Length: 66
Image (cartoon, rainbow, N blue to C red; front, top):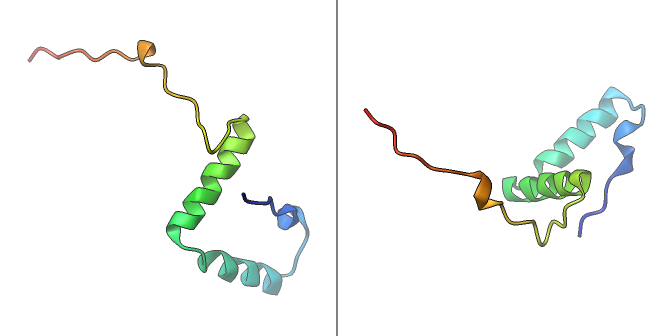
């Protein structure tokens, strides 16, 4: 499970910001997407390991006439 880094809101120097930027680029794309999903799930109160299923009653597919 990921831990939220609460240092994102601190005042920092340009050198410190550049160091953080380089750190973020060392993660792979899949790792960054996993982290983004985790943060989104926490923001909406969803369990990231067991997301809710889509309600298929609200979706309808119709064939368009040409």
